[in-house]
Picture 1 (tube, rainbow, N blue to C red):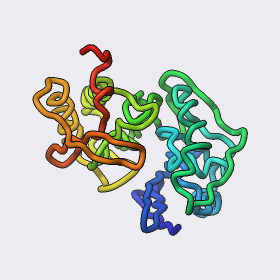
Picture 2 (picture 1 turned 30 degrees about the vertical axis):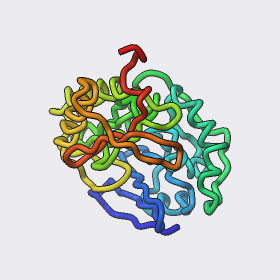
Picture 3 (picture 1 turned 120 degrees about the horizontal axis):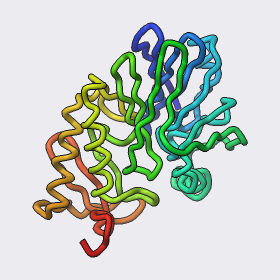
Picture 4 (picture 1 turned 45 degrees about the horizontal axis):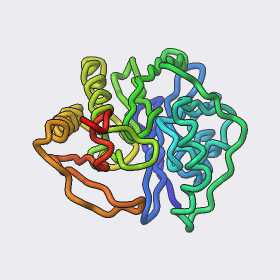
Length: 257
């Protein structure tokens, strides 16, 4: 596993962890008093040494969600914040889910998780991070609004690719649409979105595409193609620059809809 560091501005860095099969972005955000690392990747690179070279301030971790490619390096740090709603998916990805990646030697977790409820705000010193609940890809997924810079960090919620709603502990398309509508409703508060995978940065227009695609599925004006995923069969609806991967039982909030 290799990595590269890209400086985004004087106090912000993107850490890219990658090999031939996987790639994930982490973002180190520095204030005047503390720094926050958004996600900890797969944990195959020395994140403690990398972040120490970039900032002399204490570094905490804030997970956008609890999938294994976002929590793998948690043990490098003293405090890791994860939404309580992702506690079960965290356990799954620390245990059974790792067997899908036999070539990786994952680090163990430690007792450094701070489980929080509701929406939080972090003050780093002249830099405000505001959490926006974003259920969809997981129940406890969050987006992080970097208030002063007008950036929105979205994890896996709206990459310019497919959002996966076909895994254990994902939500319905209907719930996901409400998340996208909420992010669009605060659109005046951000100019760019920074996802955890694929193309970066992403124009807010991509959120509009996800809303349109979800509407077509919910209105039964479109249906995804049958595909086979490593975690079982699913459907994928390709729309413009994005797609939604889902299972037929996770379209509506009620199965009888």
